[in-house]
Structures are given as structure tokens and as C-alpha cells.
Image 1 (cartoon, each protein chain N blue to C red):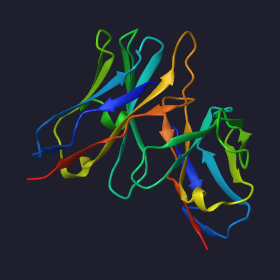
Image 2 (cartoon, rainbow over the protein chains, first blue to last red):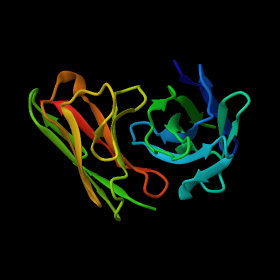
Image 3 (cartoon, rainbow over the protein chains, first blue to last red):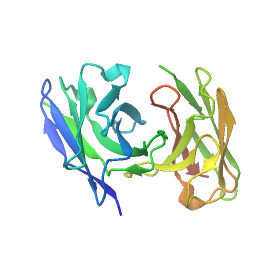
Length: 122
Length: 106
């Protein structure tokens, strides 16, 4: 059974960067897109961007343009989200989520990682 | 960006009650609307896709309707295990989530 396995919790200083990984365990990315969604403490869900690994195409939410980079390594079925110029407001749980994208893309997320807590603190 | 306005932000209902949540899009999104359930400390779970289609394995007491800008999510008979926060999500133009509705038992 496919799972999305995310990297462990991170503590970062303001102004630094963080890179979170998401590996498809038991499967591949070949027919899927991967999105990154974050959730600040006590807040709602916020979509950051996505990548279609087989095409190498990434799209980003306007709010994060220029500060987030989403990449994927097809050989290891791993996606990455790098967020730069971190500030305290970036403290959140970061989720990766999968949607079918084989031919047509269906933009509903049927599989999620367990989340990675990123804490930004001086 | 397409804005998604969910209401109410929270509600309290009794077991067995019918619960309705609405989601309004800032522009026409056809039926490109999904609903998720999130329990504390857990990742969201897909319940409804394309406005009205029930995800496999999801109980039939959950349903969705609507198109264009106005959408409704309904729990026909609230159960204790339905205590969670519910989110709508549009995908007509990239992806946006609604602000969430926290459902509690009265």
C-alpha cells in the first residue's frame, strides 16, 4: 500500500531555508502530482504549490511565489519543498498530498503524508 | 486568486442532527470543488470530489451539492466520530481551501 513518507521535524532560524521531503513508499509518482499544503497552529489549510513529476512542471500559489521551490526526483519517487527567507509566521505543519495525473489530472487529494512540523524561532 | 468563503466557521449540533456547511467561491468554478474532513493531529481525508461524488469507503451520510459559486456539504445524521473540521477546496484555478468549519457535539 502506497504511503507518502515525509521527513522529520525541523527547527530553523529566521532568514534561513528549510527543505522537506516526501517519498512515495510502495509506489511511484509516475501518474500523480504532488502538492504541498501547510497548516499553521490552530489555523486552516493553505495550498502552497504542486509539481507533476513526470513533466517536471511546478505551479505556485501567488503568496509563495519567489520563496518556495518544489522539485521531484522521479528515480527515487521523492518530492521536495524548499521554503526560503523563513519567518516566525512560517511555523506550521507542512503536508504533501497526491492526486491522480495520468493523462487528465483530477485535482482532489486522495493520499496525504503525515505532516512535517517546521518551527521558525530565534 | 479564487477565494473560498466557508460558513459557519463553527457549529454545535446533537447526535442525529442534520448538519449543513456552505462554501461560496469568488467566481464560477463549475463543479471543481472537493470536501475534506480533518481530525485533530491528523492529515485531511477526502470525502467528496467534484462537488457531489462520494469517495470510496466514505459513509453515505456525507453528501455534497452545488455548482458555479455556491456549494453545500451535508451530514444527514451527525455521529460522534464526525467531530472534526471540514474544508472545501476549489481547483478551477490552481488550488484554494476554504477557511474550515469546526463541528462539535452539543
